[in-house]
Length: 342
Image (cartoon, rainbow, N blue to C red; front, side, top):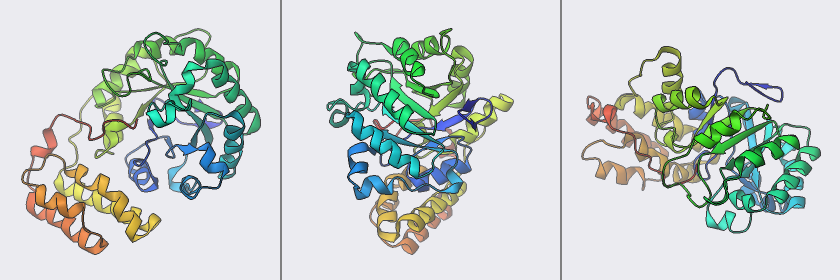
């Protein structure tokens, strides 16, 4: 599979961009476990053109992340075009347009999946961005705005016609948010539309290697994007690849191995963002690596309150000492700790 000149191999796995989750340190860990394509957290076009600190910081990308796309969102064409030009200067492999975010503060303003109510504007915005940059432009979107407006098949054709190089589809409408089951039948309808020739990436409810293989086989998508299931479980990329190659399930990392993963993640976060911010932003990740361990409340409280990196590393080491032989964590049904994001 290729996006423009970016070669991604056969049946690649993508990490979904998730605000406050897929920062550079988490992307570092996901890349270690085999993510083939990753994206920045989504960036506000308004924040970018106004040189907002948080937006500009999200442009920071590292060689270990490549290939990587910068994802932008907004509802004003001129701002989005200017933001795409700024993003291009950061030298990613591609620019991705977010037409998929369903949260009210984004979609309610007509950005993200709110754009699906105005397909003409959506297509025109995409056309102007494609013409404004030299990098490949891709789009991430949903099936439609609600059940009465599942217009993804038509929109996919129109977006392809104005020059996008790949399309990612989350199998829900904006109205569904993250509830119910993702409907992959319409993703398959887009992929199997004779008019479509760009890669189609399927997204939604990929929580296991078996589910990933099923969606590749049943719907013929070129790639799969995994979002919420990576949280506390970045090794899912390795699990899926092993299953696709062998048909056998891997045992997930044991407690001692998870301790080492958590420590690498913490150290990378502090290296990139400094001790104070790096630790603060790791609090949402650390305890998730050990979800399911018994009698973990006191340790969890330490993981989300300590503000010294050496003290935190020491506490993480005690997890290996105390629960190293525990096997319960290896065999629990997957439950995402995230209610949304993907």
